[in-house]
Image 1 (tube, helix red, strand yellow):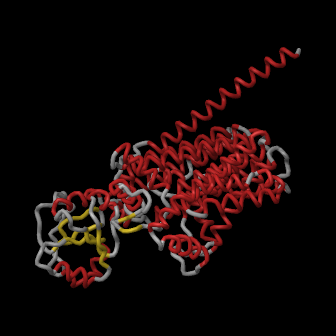
Image 2 (cartoon, helix red, strand yellow):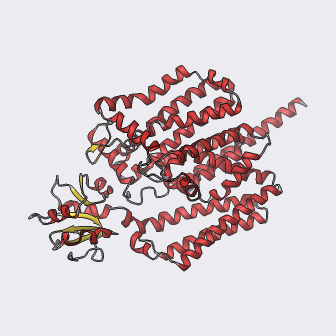
Image 3 (cartoon, rainbow, N blue to C red):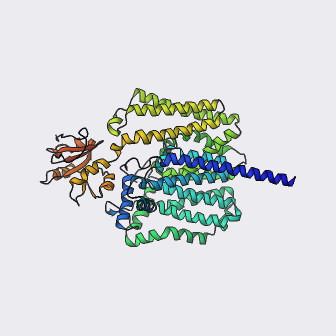
Length: 562
């Protein structure tokens, strides 16, 4: 009997490992499609992508990997880790769009896999799979994993740090090793985006231990050695940049961190409730299942994954309340709570498949009703008030927009009908396929249409040969930072119409890059000047006519300033 029991256990173990390998392959294939498909196909877009790519490119060209610069000037707004990743990618693959975005895609993949491992530990492999799929297929995480933005590095290392903590908390035998890994991951999180990289995990861990009444574990966390590991990773760069730049510490820690949190006049100041609609849109489409998932997790007294669910709730609550209390708010700030949200919603879906009780079915029914209602309202709004200005401002044809809405409605309705027929796995898969379809449509159709309005690559490459070797690009009001990446030039920004007028009145040929919306504001200051090139809504104004620019005739105008 004992031998047969052992044989059954071996067979069961092999089956479990086969299932888990299959789960991992699903996540790899999903992330490969969502994050890596035609990753370098579109040019870098202005604002953030251009800026961070230029910063990493200047790092490679200058050989200075300590003091980050943008446009040849010290750039202290961000920390260095993601710039390092992009710079290393540039060294390996050249100064390309693919190389610039590759670190984000890899970190996005890594975050999905760590989320799977955490869900596997907290509530089982199937919950891990659902959580990983949900994280990979929500709107904001897809965008952040396909863009040159620092936040993805912070999200990955905070998620990794909290995973190591939870493993140490639940596995006493290897507790010391996991806690040391926690300190290492926290050190990289601080390099990724400053003190928030250690503050958030510390708050989450402290509150969780208090609620679990297990503060005694702090005594097993080896704080002395842990602090040494943390400082060995996090401190050297901060010390070196501060020694080279005496104004760095005050600017970054006081102005960029403390004052942004406390000051009502901080940049990007928003009301307390700002993140409620951000979650609805950013965590789409899974955001519609989040309220019921949170309510159920808070009030469900079952013991199947009590401490794991509590840990995820604390993680979610700390991050959400912390950034809601901050004065400065951006949608990307709350990305560190997305892994926890994904697992909470994943538990909700898992329980529906495992034990589809009436209360669960009701929760999903009303979640889907809200989902469909929002999509129907959106479709009706576009039908009655078509945003035709999107064609002029963003290059988005209404046919594509209607097709996108049709895909969303069709997939959501199909998933709802499958739910009603109690085909819960198929319903989940339909929503997943909906997001895959949207990403493919975006990459193949939407991004190429919008690129002329969001990137200045083509315009920059046409203008570059007309300028003297050391001549700077001149912008009015807004710098198109992608132009710096594609031309290797520095830039000057003019903020007053008279400055533009004085430049164009000079005896030498001059060019000014601006947005079409500022033409009226410039008014008489551009009398006698010409719009010699355009890309989307970006114009090049010159005091001379030129036939050297190679823009298609439909994009170029000999319009004379009024």
